[in-house]
Length: 228
Length: 228
Image (cartoon, chains in turn red, orange):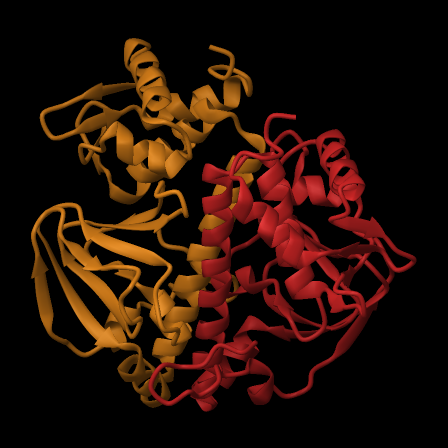
């Protein structure tokens, strides 16, 4: 579903319409794309594969900022021109990314200002998404946070299946725990519970989930799944 | 401290340098600036006073997204051109704001593309800030979350005092609880504890805190303040 503007029903701008091709770099599954000690001068577009962007706490614990798929940008912290990144990006599959220096992008914005509008809209959407996640952290227990995260990932990264389920990549429980902000064991507990109750199943491709049933679960009882 | 870009040490762009004056609207303390049922077509700049932007959960609980002061923008969700806002904005003091329609801003970006670069940098900085908050929600207990929030507010909204303390507005415990994601009672418990231990005090103007001592507290023991 594409958001449309109020008065003219124009679709939002697409940054890809304004960007020239650039060099493509390939990464193997698990390979670091940029680390925290790296200079922070580029932004990236996923061409193929998937990328995980994490923050690492002082004690080494990882927090997943998000997962990016083809046609999505990451590394936007490059725009701040700071010496180092606070995040790191890793290829989740074998992955191809296209890279531009932020100086190049800024020059392009000056020459093609609709690219600026497109980037502003993209970043506002990302901010709103972080806002929703902060709301969930503030008011939801872990069960609800996990269910909201699964619904969100299925909307962003999933593919509809024939029987009403949505097929998603094989998220590990560790990765989910780093997104939801809990331990792997607690994620496993809830994932087993959701599987027993028919909300999700493990398919050949990964995880399949019944998004509508999970939405109904969220509506039905705001305390379900928190106490057990 | 102004962030500087790596190669040229240029300061980041300032959107205010590219925006023409617009109409100013005044709000009384506590007055709603925009609500969730309102059409979402403007962005706002604080001229005087302070503004609280909140999200409201389905059960009515409020989550504070942030507090904005003079020369800061809010309402950027207007750029998505959606029918309604998911947030609401309220004047915390008697407040003046300047407003532009997002269509106006987009036209300005096309005519003055450096405004686009400035808005991109501002939004990336905001995203990084949300990322840090999500990290804190993921790994910190409530005591550390509160201390990090107090340090952040003092950096953003505080004024250095003569004795090493930073004076801040009179945050209510309720507002802090809506930012940290806990109950007012728990915030009161920790604020009393921090006050007894000399990390903060209540001044005529509001709250004064010893930011360096609180930073040291964060470094010293990652578990302090969580168990009691």
